[in-house]
Length: 60
Image (cartoon, rainbow, N blue to C red; front, side, top):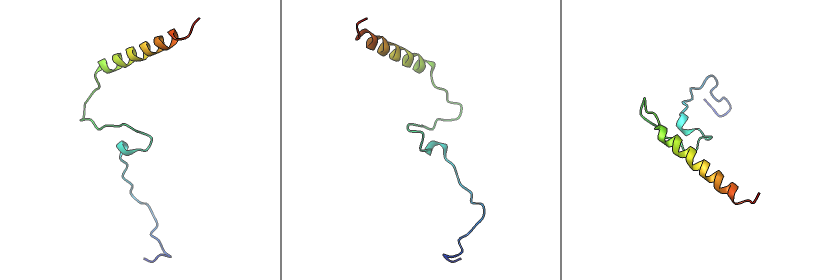
């Protein structure tokens, strides 16, 4: 092959979903791993407290 005749046809591309550019903090977990529900409960409480705190900063 020369520079004038590049190879054509299908090229197999391996896609690693953990390295997609639109995912910043993706981690690989073992098969069957599930996130604890307490993380979601804690996140909900943290956001709720932050919103209530911000709302209380502004007078009615």
